[in-house]
Length: 284
Image 1 (cartoon, helix red, strand yellow):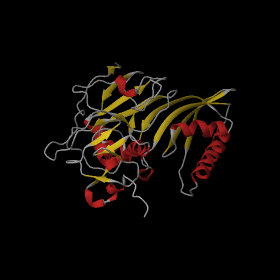
Image 2: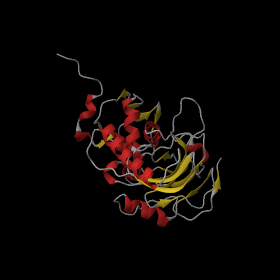
Image 3: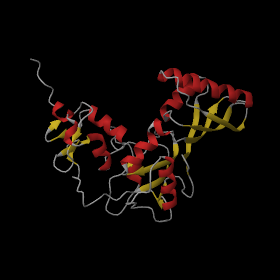
Image 4: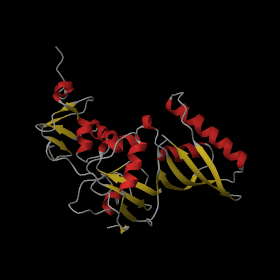
């Protein structure tokens, strides 16, 4: 008889809650990136490495570790405060919580009382700048990044080559076609481009899209002979980059959190730990 893989005991749905949801609620990362941590063998439950999904755990009784460090066990009587931070990310900063090359991380730029564990909602590669949302609200992060909820991202982008209005329209159609081909789907994922200004050698565009990842953008535009010269995120859904200089951050206002949650199809959070108005703060 074949030997049962060691992580299959956690395949029993009656055990409790999906493990990636528990990790996200503990502030480890978004659900999608917690799944990557699991598949990479960095998560243990009661001393056993769990790599197969789906997997369910009991967050009140199981000992769950990520990269050798136990997460805080959930207590029904002590809900977690949620924090929402707008960072204007500078270049040469990575938006991952774990970097094998020791580069400066976005979370290193933010300091909050009590040092709650935050993670980035989505990714901006090291060269890119602009709006980056940091939070410990796993459910909101999941909805803001999952294509099902179609929360748009808006970028100011400078590409090589001078494009007139007709050229921008052609580029928009080519991007949509290449995106569908690369993902093997016929679902319409509109890419919207607006010409801001141009000269002979480069074009400044405003780009709005729902799903394509930041790294995909660079690869896609390079494949279309318009490599990216500069990329800055200026909006995430209804949330616009405002009142924060490069390298600085501020907590979101209550109205901004509410608007984001509505865009993601959620109600208001009862535990918004950073929703009070606050002036921008310098990176640490």
